[in-house]
Image (cartoon, rainbow, N blue to C red):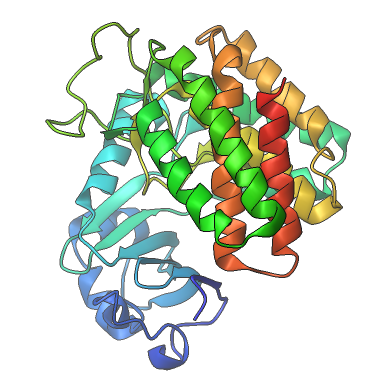
Length: 361
């Protein structure tokens, strides 16, 4: 069974023919329109979407035993996301971001959080109308791509400047640990993937000491309590700011006068360079898959970075970018290895080569 499935199937079909997933206990209830309607009659939902008498559901994306995202059509549209585990924290993080200035009326915003229904483990949020940044980058002209790059960069700069620090601390040590695990898995493939993943990990490890006293920032989350969670800035570091965690063009919607970033399941506290690197690599991966060359969207990439740095919030990001981009390359190569879709080995090798090139600069 694939790890992720996209489906336009209407949930009025038998749920077992669509997403039979015991790993998400409440999914069957949610995919039954009559049952779901009973849970949507509360005031917090009805105020936003009108009557819940006629409910239609369309599955958008399903991650087996983890979460399922779908559109709910009432009077207006909602996006629902059901989780395998209880995730009220995602709703709480989104509310804090709205309070920090990322509400639906803002130029740089997130989807309006509507409600979290704990009995269903269901997050309800605004359906944002607009074009996906990813789609414009793939089919748009040079001018359209430039506008996308600038808007995404300005959103991220504002997020890093204003969003409250949130979530687990993802420091250099944790990134190295994750990279080492991914390297070991890639080594099991043998051949060029093994050799290049080993080489990349050694370069990552060599580059890490220079990052030991850099400022960290909050990634897609919130400051909490103890252990792995951040209470305040570590001694010897600069102040913290926010980091989305998996910021990429596929999570950005460009509406009328509004740039919206969705998908807040993963939020941490990290160096802002991590988000910047993640977006850049998302463009390079798109370029490789769509155009056969990792360099095909380099103009948009350069404009994104220039716009972000010109915002003046974190001028030191450029110096730290190679480490984080190379770590993202290792993660992307590992993802290709795990999913093994057509052409995966060539893309995995290209990601490792890009990481090596980046750290060799």
